[in-house]
Length: 203
Ligand SMILES: C[S@@+](CC[C@H](N)C(=O)[O-])C[C@H]1O[C@@H](n2cnc3c(N)ncnc32)[C@H](O)[C@@H]1O
Image (cartoon, rainbow, N blue to C red; front, side, top):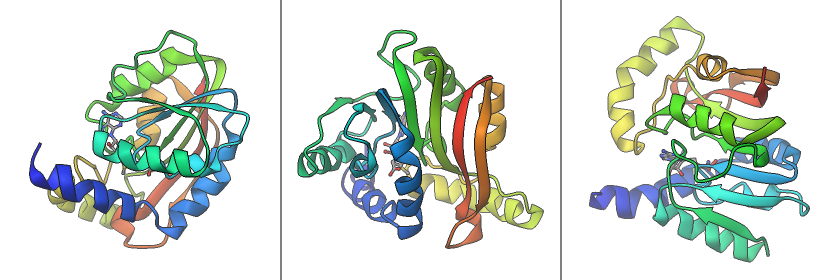
């Protein structure tokens, strides 16, 4: 890991992910998690304040640097979170062990999203739900073309983030259907702000 990834990227991500438009989405979605919850890509812990007090949260993320921020947030809000330092492609949990999975703006960065979604499916209890928010491929062809052009540079600056993943396709191919979904641009440059959010479950 280079100096940029170790020292600058965690600070940059922690700041960028605090954008008010994203916080509004967190506020609406995260309280929907119930029971035993697995958060994939917990990052700097920005969802932690929004969990109901009744849930038991396990937060997975390969970045120890971001996990430090998340631990501070958990302690500040008096929340107990079990942290797992690993990627979502290999979740160290039994089959059918979580009631909810929360994943916000992370599928864009996971190197093997198909594997991660298969793992999420494995660890979710029957009837369990994935509460998600992601940015991804825009429906407007000219925006999508710009996303494709910028993506190689964005990928390096954003620590592996892809601007134009086909979020609907990834969920569908993994055998999930949406219980609810909203799509649209949030505030900011259109190449980076086409968002998908909702609840998915095994269809
Ligand atoms: C843009 S950040 C989003 C962080 C957080 N979910 C949020 O809403 O603020 C992307 C996150 O994906 C994490 N990540 C990278 N590779 C991953 C993987 N293989 N599995 C799970 N998370 C991963 C990064 O460490 C980072 O925390």
